[in-house]
Amino acid sequence: MLSEKGLFMIDIQNFGKRITDNLEKVIIGKRPALDLVVIGLLSQGHILIEDIPGVGKTVLARSLAKSVDSVFSRIQFTPDMLPSDVTGVSIYNQETRKFEFRPGPLMGQIVLADEINRATPKTQAALLEAMEEHQITVDGVTHQLLKPFMVLATQNPIEYEGTFPLPEAQLDRFLLHLQLGYPGIANEIKILENQQRQHPLETLKSVISNEEILEAIKTVKEVYVSKAVKRYIVEITIQTRQSSDVHLGASPRGSLALFRTGQARAALRGRDHVLPDDIKALAVPVLGHRIILGSAARMRELNADQIVRELAHGIPVPGGDFQAEKKK
Image 1: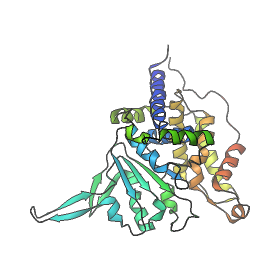
Image 2 (image 1 turned 30 degrees about the vertical axis):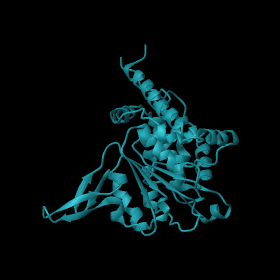
Image 3 (image 1 turned 90 degrees about the vertical axis):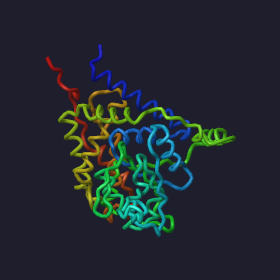
Image 4 (image 1 turned 180 degrees about the vertical axis):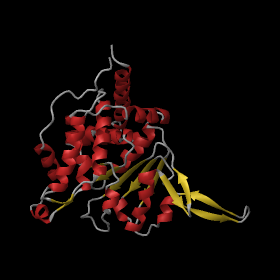
């Protein structure tokens, strides 16, 4: 018989499958990226999606909000946008003779920060408090955000004109960084067929409630992580700081991100314990955007993902039993 925790892990596996299957009705042929989105949701993290226009970044965020029955909010960033356009503003009501808070688009649950790198750094920084502390402060008054709360930010590659690179402090607050890429021939044909009469997003239904999400988040935190796996996490992060190809390595926040996402990945695969393979699979999307390459690496035309992948594969994988000791 399975333990009570084992049964719960299977529930989490079913939880993830319901969401990804629903998302695949709209986002065709991108299952690995969708799995990362669910991992981000269960880890209470935020996701940065970087890719060229037209591959489905915005549609992915809308589809997720519909799938999990959450309040969707969109911020279309532009160079002339002010921080108050994001957080909200206090307006004086002449009838009541009091200031009233008019919430901005950040007061949602699934927040799409579209083309975030088109906003100025000052406006980008307005997201920091919300992403880290799940609250915003306007005119000295703190407003708590709804739960669950998740920012899906999209950005076009830096090579595109009219963009501002995200500051390092903000990049570090994104749990995961992913790319969608172009679909294959068969998948692109399927996209054409699916949208012949109407967009599948219009008929997409909710498959998960808010209560189920919050319960799943609690359950994932109970997934066991052995000392050997914890050490493996820290060794990978330390390697990013010691590599000659890296100017600035990942902070302890990177280790925490690997820890949390490792728990989510294990639960989604029906396990109540994390394996080194979970950590190795997540090293690039978790750490790639957190490091700054040195001049030597840039001259060799290496990118951050390649460096992290090489570092992770160069560290010996620990052996042994990674399951929690059974109580007698």
